[in-house]
Image (cartoon, rainbow, N blue to C red; front, side, top):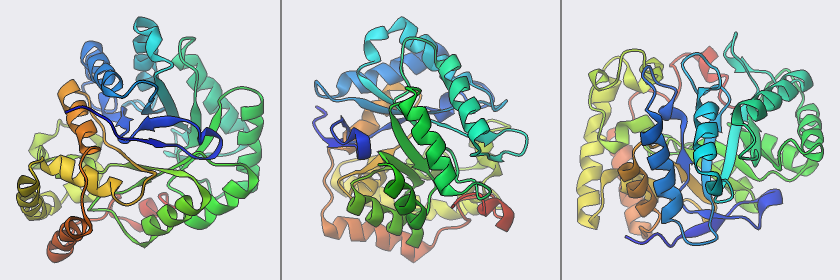
Length: 343
C-alpha cells in the first residue's frame, strides 16, 4: 500500500512535514536482549523509504533507553547514521532526557538538563543533529519558567532546534508555550489510555498549534495481539512492572482485543492498524507513535495512517472498550509511581 498521508509539526517546526505515523525506537534496546543492528537498521530504513518525497520520519529515542539506563539507543542510532548518512535529513529526531537514573525520576534543573543534552549529543555523534529535545517528565521541584529558560538557552546555543514536552498537563503545556513555542507534546494515548487529561492536552495542543505525539497506541503491545500472557515477554522486560501486565490484568484485557479484532476484520485491516487509526482520528496533528523493530511491522504501522475511520467506527471502538472495561492502570499501580506521570 503506498504511503501518502502526512501532517505538520507545531511551534518552531510548523513548516516541517512528517509522516502521519511516527516510529518509536525504545524497544530496540530497552529490553534484556537488544535487537541486532541489521534488524534495527532495516526497520528504520523501511519506514523512511516508504514516505513521500520531502516528508521526514519522526523518530523517537531516549537518553536512557537501555536496561542500564544509559545511551544504548542513541549509540545504535549513531551507528545507523554513520552507515546511512543520507538518512539524517530524511528523519526528524526527538530525544527524551532529564532523568536521574539513581532515583528513576525527573531532574529539570539547569545543570541536569545541560548535562543530559551534552550526553545525548556525545552519544549521537556527528552524523545527525538533535532536532528536538524534551524533558521526559515534568520535575515538580523546578518551576516551569526555570525549565523553559534553560531549554530556550540551549536552543539559542545551537544544541538542538526545537523544544518538546512529555507527560504534561494541559495547564503546564499552556504555561510553557506562552514562554516559547512548543513543537510537540508527547503523551500516552490508546483505546486503553484515553482519559480526561489526555483529552485536555489534545484540545489545548490543537488550540495552540502544537503536535501531539501519542505514544503506546497499542497499549505497550497488548492491542497488537502479539502478547497474550506474561510468558510472551522475556524475563526482565520492563513491561512486566506495569499494572496491566500483572495479576491477571493482561488476560483480563484480551476480550477487548478479541472484540476489536472483529471490528478490524470488517474493515479489512489488522487490530493494530485499527487502534493506530483510532488514535490518529483524535486530531489532525495527533501523531501515533508505535514502536517497531521489524521492517514488516514498521510498514504495517505506517499503513494505518492511510486508514480512515468514520465517526461511527470511532464510536464503535470506544464502546467496545467501555463495555469490557480496562483492567489495570497505565502505571505501576501505586499512587507514588502514578505521581511521576503528569506534571
